[in-house]
Length: 142
Length: 320
Ligand code: B12
Ligand SMILES: Nc1nc2c(ncn2[C@@H]2O[C@H](COP(=O)(O)OP(=O)(O)OP(=O)(O)O)[C@@H](O)[C@H]2O)c(=O)[nH]1
Ligand SMILES: [Mg+2]
Image 1 (tube, rainbow over the protein chains, first blue to last red):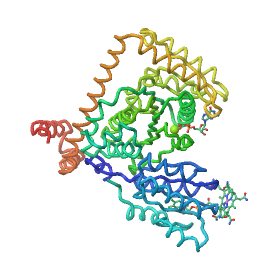
Image 2 (cartoon, each protein chain N blue to C red):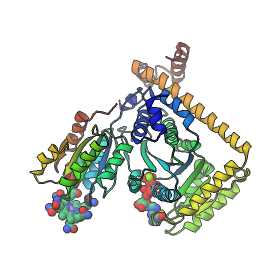
Image 3 (cartoon, rainbow over the protein chains, first blue to last red):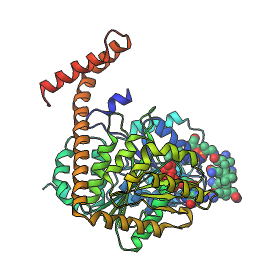
Image 4 (cartoon, rainbow over the protein chains, first blue to last red):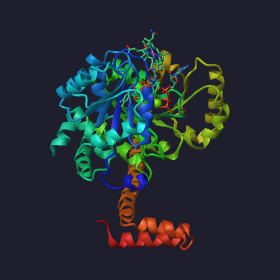
């Protein structure tokens, strides 16, 4: 009954930014995730490839998203992911949730979480789970 | 004047971004903010860019932004993409082509989904234009996919409307005539690096020249070619925008007629939108809507009677 819900006054819709930081050119995963989010009823802004953390944060703010989903398969996540969190904080936008997905050495995952990445999704995670996590952890902001 | 109006009028990016979100989410309090913001609007020049999916609208917008910035102009961009009728979600992909302007403080880019199931698109987009106007942007570029009535409608908010086509749309131009051709102030045949651009230009020219009343009042829509990915033809587009701008400004009567027409259109749409919001939201929430749908589906009730009953009851009971 999504359609009916839409016309309620003040109905918030979840908005997310799916972004590809760094020089990593693997975008299949990011596109699949973007589609899964759309099919769950979210509005998904896609950043395209080769984004700097600064560009991602600026896009997140201009688009007023509730969450930024970072995708990385190229190994530069230990620098890029925490940098995004840090810049959001600097801009007073720490209320925007950050999660990530892609390929990571196992020992990096706790470090990323410590740096403020709320959750990390690795290959093989069912899409339904990826979507459910957002529904449970991301509130459209007021 | 509220804090938020002050912030928006002084160009505060977060305030602008959040206000557009509230507009989109139809937060009731937004109405008062928009009222207070209105005096700050009316300065920006609004350009609509529309055309079929994939013709290169976003790439063109991206290049136009570069040129406008080179001339020291500030730019706001609204990129509108359709909401999926199945999930209510949307993938907003226009930004991909414009991201290089992300860090430029003279540029504000916002993606919007149509959402308009009960007529929401045009109103939200119009209000968002007002917000970018109030924040002080010199130019506002609005990209819409030109396929439906909604998209043509959006064009009513633009001072200059650019219709983008690509070579080899021969038969499609015929089809376009019914809606989109009439609203174009400038035509751009993009992807002119491909074969058949001249042919498309000629076809277009023929159609426009046949339509004499279109340019009786003095503006004959120019037809340009461009290669957006190679940054070719962009300067010419901007020159024609300036020409059209000068044309609109050249006659006081024309200007006031246009203002009047825009006011008529905006107010009509706003009234429609509000009635839909208030009446429909009410009967949906009360279950009356679903009940009526069920009765009609079972052919126990005709839709005319159902409509009369709902509307007369709501109008009589007054707005809440
Ligand atoms: C296909 C592929 C390519 C394609 C990419 C096509 C494209 N446009 O995406 C091509 C051939 C271009 C390519 C090139 C390269 N590749 Co490659 N590639 C792969 C491969 C085989 C599959 C990746 C894939 O598409 N998987 C399918 C998608 C759906 O899965 P996914 O991206 O992992 O996404 C899932 C999750 O990770 C998660 N997820 C991902 N992102 C996000 C984001 C969010 C927000 C969330 C919630 C979840 C999420 O959810 C997704 C769905 O479950 C992997 C190996 C592998 N088995 O993963 C190597 C792999 C990623 N590639 C690798 C390498 C080294 C390269 C090259 C450098 C090779 C070279 N020397 O030329 C180049 C570099 C390209 C570049 N510029 O970055 C390495 C990376 C190693 C590393 N981490 O250091 C891998 C791991 C292969 C290996 N074992 O060595 N590659
Ligand atoms: N050959 C050629 N390709 C172009 C040109 N301009 C844009 N493109 C390509 O056309 C594709 C679509 O471009 P976009 O700018 O995304 O088109 P759009 O009209 O905004 O698309 P939607 O928003 O999805 O409707 C991209 O791959 C561009 O690189 C051009 O002048 N020549
Ligand atoms: Mg586009």
